[in-house]
Image (cartoon, rainbow, N blue to C red; front, side, top):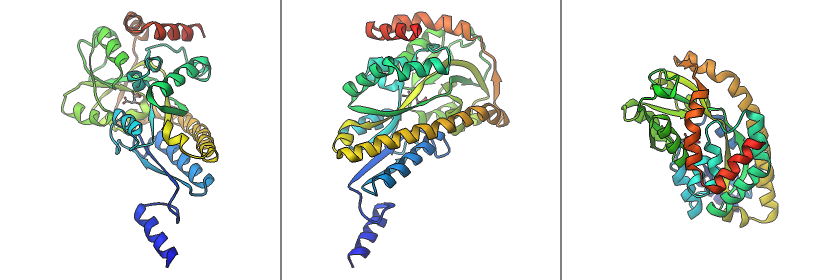
Length: 319
Ligand code: CS2
């Protein structure tokens, strides 16, 4: 009788385990199920549920099912969600997170990794925890952000007031305005429809999200600005993490490490295939004069950064 009841309640809760878990982690993010971020989140779920012997249950919500990136950050702070994938949008709370949005700040992947894994990354993470009450569990490298539009854009002059969607990142607004575009902050899930209705003319993202949002259906050109090479954090609410016993907190942290290694392999595979995949879907890749874009962006960056941000930016350049 008791087992049947437990089974029924487990089925009702949509739980994968027979027994109701002690802790549930609601993990929402903006990518779709095919995106490597979601595949990495599935690996995290598998690891946590197995190694906690069902005491922790992870519920995954891709495609902004729990709300936009900004909404989910607020939800985690309120306790109605628990985890998400976020980065430079954290600048709205922690100014040092703007380092994830500085155009042309990193020479290459190695330079970026040295910053994230070193004191600069520690400084950013410490301020994120202090100002947002979100704990970065791990991070993923991202492909460079590219500018999509329905025309070729080779130099900043070609922008000519391009109505461009950007995420809710103040530094993105400042730099794209300086380069000659007209940026509008908007949630990622609204981008496809806004492009379809010509509310905006372009957006900028790594190829991975351009593919998983099917932006090839509403954008003809990938202008290879490569204007931001960056990373993204997987975060958990500090209260949600610390209310677990130490052994379960360790299970969560160990699972995050496994997830990072798993995603890193998927990232390499993704980067090798994405340009070809998007070309086959009809997008035209345009070589861009990145040097002129960098020259045009730099004064806006130095103007926009405050003292603590500028000090961090200089530390990045000195690496
Ligand atoms: C995505 C986000 O919305 C987007 O364009 O690329 O990951 C974006 O980078 C966020 O600002 C990250 O915090």
